[in-house]
Length: 330
Image (cartoon, rainbow, N blue to C red; front, side):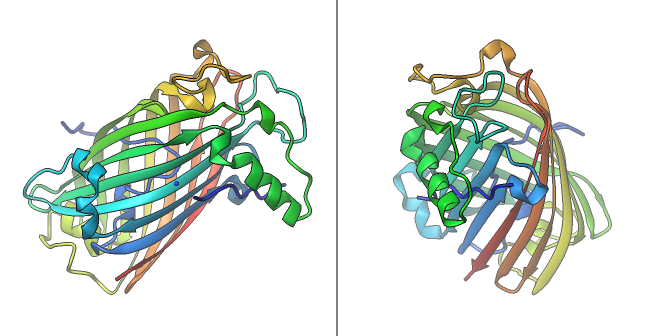
């Protein structure tokens, strides 16, 4: 088993909605923080689920601050009126490997090696009267060797005295990433003060991936004020009304409709990658389930999560991974 650490440098449906299906989703409603200034680190790895292939690791460092509303790229984000806005910037890196990193040859019928490095500007707009939240983001970056996945994984394997990973020379070649996404979420059902079910709609498109997804989000427990102020029909508050502590469980089942995925099919512009998954082999519908536990106490944010995903291509396997998140607000 290998612990892989790669480069860190970046109208509502009733029971089903569209929600962004991606590796690290820092804008998910269950990750809302009741502050307009905070910093948070997201780390995902299939090590947490005793697997060691496909989406093997993701890192995201985000900073939220009102000053970022003046960031040039923030002007391209959708920000509705009569809402409470949060603005942020993040750097994200994701790494993907086939089922084995001990073979120097191309593993045909398996997942290609791929790494992506992103700079993302994002916003969240919460309407406490209509109990809805709209998010949008613009991601710019690179997929391929320029993301540094091979070098970092090799270095870390040397540090932990593990075998050097083989096969990275066959990874998806360098290409430009430009991706835009937006989503809307609103309360579908509420039972008491401790159970809320939301529906979502959204879309993401660009050179990294284009997809739609269908799902719902369930919150259960002592919810934080960021969640209740927006989605609870029994209270009307603001993000500034912070409770001292909260702990709740969430679950989010989704059905994904896949149009394009550069980590499988290669870059949008550069078609010289030595190995990719043909379009006819891509599974156009997949199921993903996310669930986890969130703890917030005063200025501290902690989360542990796990995710499952059905096979993404016809000769592939299902996959599981876990994640931890640590944040501080001020």
